[in-house]
Image 1: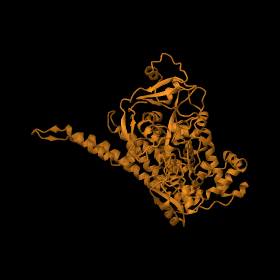
Image 2 (image 1 turned 60 degrees about the vertical axis):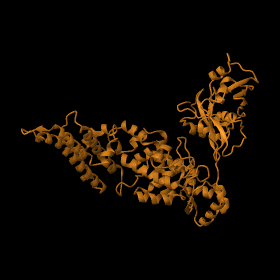
Image 3 (image 1 turned 60 degrees about the horizontal axis):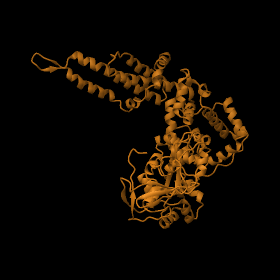
Image 4 (image 1 turned 120 degrees about the vertical axis):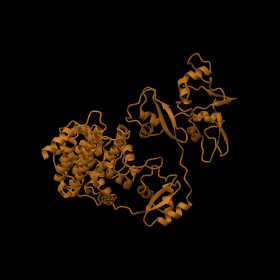
Amino acid sequence: MKHLCTTILITSFIFLWSCSSSLDRIQSNPSSFTNQDDSKEQDSKSKKGKNLDGSETLTQENASLQDEPLSILEDALYVYQDSQLSWEKGDFDTALATLDDAYSLILKLNLPPDSSLIQEKNDLRLLIAQRIQEIYASQLTAVGNNHQTIPLVENEHVESQIKRFQNAERKFFEQSYKRSGLFMQMILEELRKAGLPEELAWLPFIESGFKVRAYSRARALGPWQFISSTGYRYGLKRDRWIDERMDPVKSTKAALKYLSDLHSHFGDWTTALAAYNCGEYKVKKVIRNQRFNYLDNFWDLYLMLPRETASFVPRFIATLLIVNDPEKYGFNLPTPDTPLEFVSLPINSPIRLSSLSKAMGLKEDILSSLNSELRHGATPGYEYVLRVPLGFAEKAMIALNTLPTWIPPEATYRIHRVRRGESLSLIAQRYRTSISSIARLNRLRRVDLIKSGQRLKIPVRGRSYASSPPPKLVKEGEKLIYIVRRGDSLYKIASAFSTTVGKIKKDNSLESDALDVGQKIVIQSSIPQGATIYTVRRGDSPSRIANKYGMNLSILLSLNSLNYRSKIYPGQELWVVPKKQGSN
């Protein structure tokens, strides 16, 4: 029977990675075949014959042809579901025998090329092949307690990582071990609830050193090092105020869901861990190039994985070996930190944690540690559950009722056009921001790849912080005028006011690009077409209004005879020019 199952696995393997989009549909809706039967039955009604008396009837031959394939597919699906029950009970032999029966039923189907049931047959065949693969993998790589243990193989790769921890990375190891105490109890409780190996609690040790704000070159964040897309996929919220990848409790629950899915897919923990580190698709790509029995030994994949991932699994195993027997490996580990107990309070307004800590008589880092998902050290402008130390709930409530609502500075950006020879570090220095902030705002995958002429969004708060003062416009009647300064060019002026060199030359009847210091350049000749009146509301600022309508801030200010220090008030009327949809 094992030979037959192996044959099935090999013959079906080429399908396993090519199409899986409809597998969940079959698993989650076993009645799909029955529904297909119903639709076929309705279709067959259109193929009725006529009796001598003129009445219509369905021929027995047609009914038989329609019902037999569907019946076989239904039987095969029910047999497949029986194998799942046997596998969950740990009865691998029965599970494999049942899958053998299901596959034999499918082989009986001899469908014509245009049959609508071909896709259903292939989907079920894929399910059976995948399940056989998972069962064999769990038998080969898992030990004890229904494959809930991670094998601690001490080979040359693991020994190499142990030596690194003993020497160059000893300080990192000891500090990470000390921090682990803050979260270990919580993580172990979540693992037990999920029925996963408790050794996985040490995964953040390798990923982040148990630092809740750890941020990698791959833009992974938090103790479990989620990239934003995977975090979103597993329910971690991210907005202007919070990033739940930095919350130990929420990110732990998401990580365990992800790990469980990876183990279910790959069938063994070492491969699942590799996929957790570099993504399942990269591991799949490596697996496609391996021989069919790749899951017999994870270390067959080892040298084919990306370098960082290749060291990830040995580092994890090395960590488990050391924490299980520190004396054997020459460690005298420090006492783990004690987790801080807390209570949760719902609040509805933005409050600075620093102000709240002072009012409660606490060190600022305590509230910051308990609420590490807060991106800017303040609660959001919507309902939020704030964590405060146990015994401080009453003080927190009193403080929350007396503290003023915090109004964050308006987050804006300006456009910078990259010049020849500029680097991201030079641009970040000029605008007093960070390389990572520019890269994140522009979704740059590589910070060393920017090109001349590229437009970059530069994050600023409130007003611009460029090395030179922002350009000013003078209002003459309905015209907006710019006075040329030393070092100006048409290109620079056009970029500053979100217009084009051609338009400036046309509006000013310029035949060349030459400019003189003190020369007046018309930026806008009249109240622009499409301009409308905007009534200022409470909480508005010029930058917020300009951003809302897609306007250049300098033009908004000059159009309304304002400057960068002008204050605006609720009820005040301003000219605005809404940006046309689809325009750049």
